[in-house]
Amino acid sequence: MCRHLAYLGPEEPLGRLLVEPPHSLVRQSWEPQRQRSGTVNADGFGVGWYAPGDPVPARYRRAGPIWADLSFTDLARVVRSGAVLAAVRDATAATPDGEAAAAPFASGRWLFSHNGAVAGWPDSAAPLVSELPPVELLSLEARTDSAFVWALVLHRLRSGDELDQALGETVLQLAGAAPASRLNLLLTDGTTIAATAWGDSLWYRTEPGRSTVVASEPYDDDPHWQEVPDRTLLTASRAGVLLAPLEEPASAPSKEPCT
Image: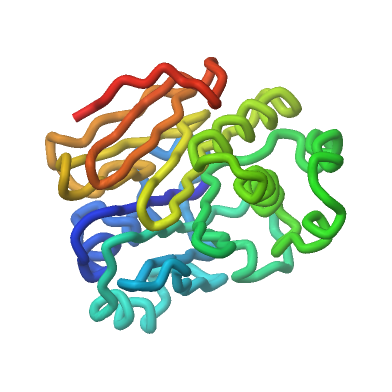
C-alpha cells in the first residue's frame, strides 16, 4: 500500500538514500519486507528535496514504477540534499490521475505522503467534506483518498497547526469516520519530520545532532533502526526523535525523547 521515507541530515546524493542501500526504496517497490497490504509498489513514485537557501522543495514524480525510470537513476546520482521525502505507490484503485496521484504532494514548504487507505472511500469521507473550504476541495490534485487526506492536513497547516498536531488530529478525525483505515502519514517542511504509525510499519534511525531517517521499513541491516509502535505520532529533527501515543490529544502529547 506504498512505502515512503524522509531524511534530514548532511547533504547526500539522492541515490545514496534511495537507490544504493541493500533494501532501498527502489527495491521496496518490488520486494517490500514489512508491508502489510499489497506486494508490489509499481503505480507511480515521487521524490521531493530541498536545495540550500530555498525553502520550497523541488519534486520529481512519475506514474510508472521507479525501477523503470532511467532518468531518475541519473538524477539520483548527481542531486544532493539534506532534506528529502520520497515514496513508491501501490494504488488502492485504478484512477486516471497519473503522476498527480503520486506522493509527495506539495504546497509551499511542505511535502506529504500517505501510506495506507481510507476504508470505505469515498463514502466514509463524505462527512468530512464540510471541514474544507469549497475552493480547497475543488483544487484537489487527484481523485484519491491520499489527495483528500493531504487536503485535510494542509488546511490545518494553513490554519496554524504545527506539523505533528496537523497529522495527529487528521488521523484521529479520519479514524473516527472510517475506523478500519490505514493512516501512516509522513510530512516535512525541510527542518522537521512528522509521521504517524497507524495500521502499517514505520521505523526510524537517528544519529542525534547529525541525521534522522524515518521510513516504512529499514533500508539496511544497521542495528540502530527502531520500530515505531502502532498508533504513535513521531516528530523528528536532526537532533533526534520524539514519540507520543495517538490516543492522547495531539495538541498536548506527553513526549519522551528517543535515541
